[in-house]
Image (cartoon, rainbow, N blue to C red; front, side, top):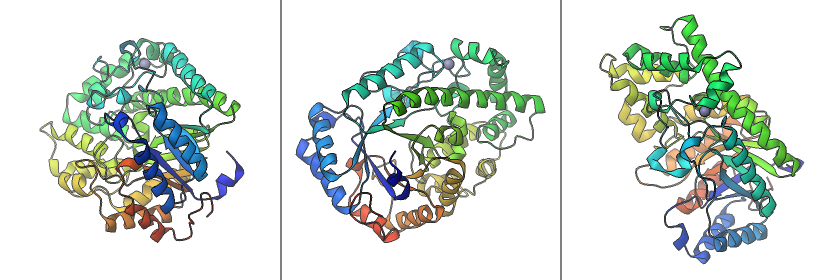
Length: 417
Ligand SMILES: [Zn+2]
């Protein structure tokens, strides 16, 4: 990364994720939207989708060059992309012994195991091939993690495949013992509560020291597994001289998906934290916390009115009083600020606040007052920039004007604070 980048307020923009209608979009409409976005904001990085038809990829690349934006590939690393497929033998295995299914059955949300030797080879080769195409200034690596266990830790907390078992045994960690412990905890209300507390980085007072130690060793093994593959890949990417950005869960949620923001940030040029305060979709803070809420409330012995309090205590962030309020309103701007501050304090690399601006029915319903309050939280947290999320195509452009109201010193020239 050039030294100038470290000093200016970075604004990155994700564009054209894989959707069923992507092939049908008119090239002119796609370019027009990008141009209109650049007219309103000094975009420094365009993070372009992974499964574009050549005509759209070429048009966006030329336009980005014309507009002075860096052109990075938005690349799902440990899930499917346009070429790499998460074949069954590669997939993460949950504590119940089943393959962890992809969110909504989607390939780009079906995770493969970072400890599988063939996976390591395949994802390296894939990046090598992309590097050779010479189309990108760098890579924005997404899905560099394990699947989220929030909705169902029994089925979704992994990995217990043969490769993970072998690797963990070498450091004295018995994954079968871990697996049986999780299966046992899942069967009681108190066990589930303790599991949630450990997964969210809290203290589980009801667990013995030995059980806590075992689960923490498992979580550490997972973060080490993710770190290792990032270290391996970042070496070759850095050798090629390209920029590396990394998509990360919000600090309170990162540990449960195997992401150690401090360690990961040492390997890349910047990290984006998905501190989506209002999103009801994967990685969104309300979505993930509601997953835990439902997991805990399906067992009868817990008082539903106390569940959100326990979850909030585990992440040390106050949450709305009811499930409905968390679902409809998300977390407060004060809580968002705290999450972003934690990421700035933890990360060794510049932090971009992943800022949701999409309007998607059932996933985000935002309003200007709340967007302005959240942007002010971003400003107070002192991040290095914004990563406007998560697809320009679904963002009403007038929302970009709100960014200017909170960050009046940014000019419309890319890279000029
Ligand atoms: Zn595995």
